[in-house]
Length: 96
Image (cartoon, rainbow, N blue to C red; front, side, top):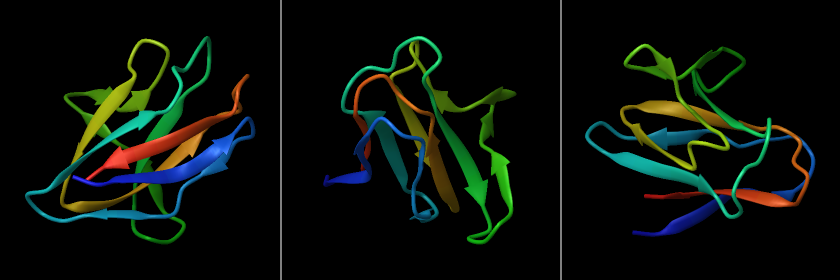
């Protein structure tokens, strides 16, 4: 497994580049420091352009939050991550 820093550590809002996950593969996403309060990383399925839809599994929107520090994304698909502003500089990473 290799780790990729998809969003560099920052306190600002940030959006990742598109992440392609092949059929049968999965990636685990997490932040280097724990999210607090209303901080979050939202995960979107995208067409690689401007069309985005929140990733929903089992009727629930998939996101990293104070109470959910990691998420598994299953392929196939193209995904985009969006981090809210954070009190401390935090990076978003994934293993593939």
